Image 1: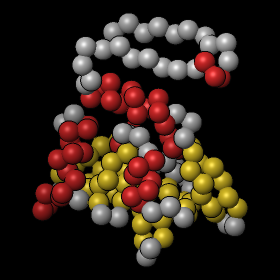
Image 2 (image 1 turned 90 degrees about the horizontal axis):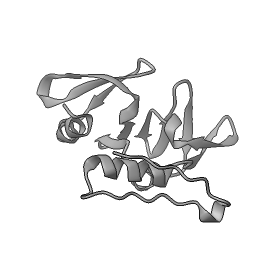
Image 3 (image 1 turned 180 degrees about the vertical axis):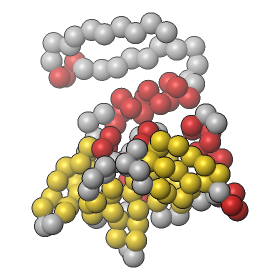
Image 4 (image 1 turned 60 degrees about the horizontal axis):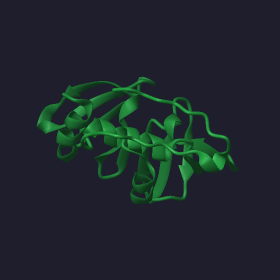
Length: 144
């Protein structure tokens, strides 16, 4: 596939055009990345509010009606619900349990578990469980 880059004269002229014979999974992924580039989420930790970039997120978990966002080293809280975050995030994010969303680009390895579940080891060496009902979609997205 040929890639062409042209410098725009101003921010108003910025655009991305993809010409393809058909819309494949790879094209969908590229569109998702472009649409969410620079996306940030308001989070808080220790009384301070931060704007966290989507690509820094490892996984998101809902516990006792509170939503926590985990990065490589920190845990932040957000007021957003999982379904709201799911709509905001790109195709790199996948619901992996009723109360969890994972960034599939942060998965180091996966291993099948009992009862049809999977264990995923993330790049920060944390382990998470992929619920049985989400395993098929994860395998499809990872290409396994």
